[in-house]
Image 1 (cartoon, one colour):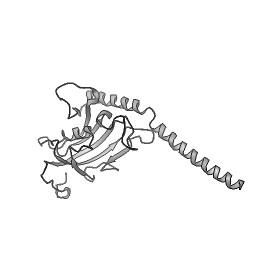
Image 2 (cartoon, rainbow, N blue to C red; image 1 turned 180 degrees about the horizontal axis):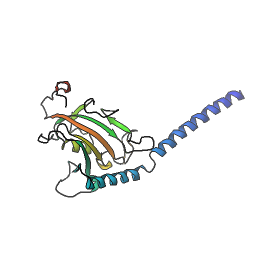
Image 3 (cartoon, one colour; image 1 turned 90 degrees about the horizontal axis):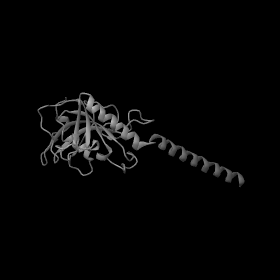
Image 4 (cartoon, rainbow, N blue to C red; image 1 turned 30 degrees about the vertical axis):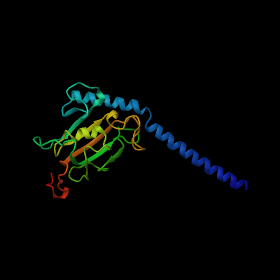
Length: 207
């Protein structure tokens, strides 16, 4: 009987140590997370001011004619430009988008942990999967919606979204910790006004 009791004790101890180890790992992964994200944003803002190929876009719900706080803008690194004379999507339009959302780099994920997207491997505009949704969807973070309303068909951007325009102080489930700046690699494939059908992806000309 004593042997069985000892075995049970050892099993419980092992489970407890395992749980503690996982918790410690999580704590280490996201240690000083808010500060690290603030510092990362400051570096992005600096790049947007000093390097070419960047855009700073104010959140769509705010007055674009007045200077705002750093956290009221998304910061865009243009990877590839689409049709420069094309139209821009409206807030009420539907959009077809390929995208990959990541957190800032961390110990285990030097490129940033992928938390959402249509692409979970290598981002390639010729092979990426895509999704279609309403830009005005209430579940969409405002920074992502802001980016879409400034993109033209074929635009491929890397978008940096401050936590205030993303999931803020609450985060999102277990995938996005609180105070996370989000990084989206995204390509606008197509869009259409409300009530108008969008061509299916397979029918479109390959870029």
